[in-house]
Image (cartoon, rainbow, N blue to C red; front, side):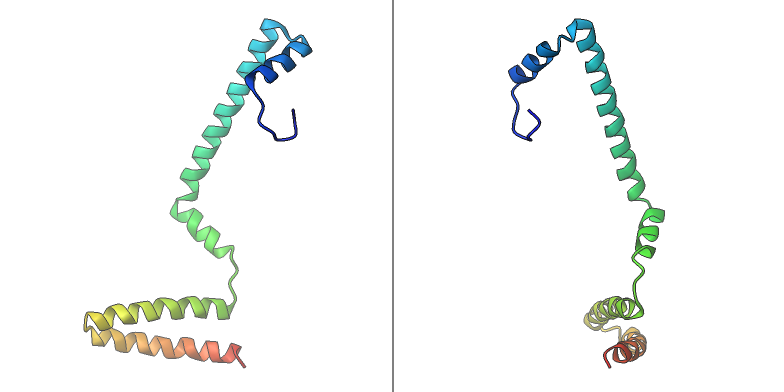
Length: 114
């Protein structure tokens, strides 16, 4: 019954009857099982809630320990996206600022590609 195959209710009841648990023992076991399931569900809900907080995101991001090159690649992708947005909006002053920053990022990337 422990080989991860589907088990029927009848098989479970037969196994419990084999153990000679009795009605009182069965009730106690049911209470313990439900209690653990509720505790696990509340822990899961807590984790989901906490993991969506700003602090959790920033901490997880810091734990990535990105290299200078990886940071530069991420920055380049962001800048290229912004450049496309500003070009479509014809915000050329913003494009000029993005280009200056992109030049700095490209220097970092060239340094790592040698």
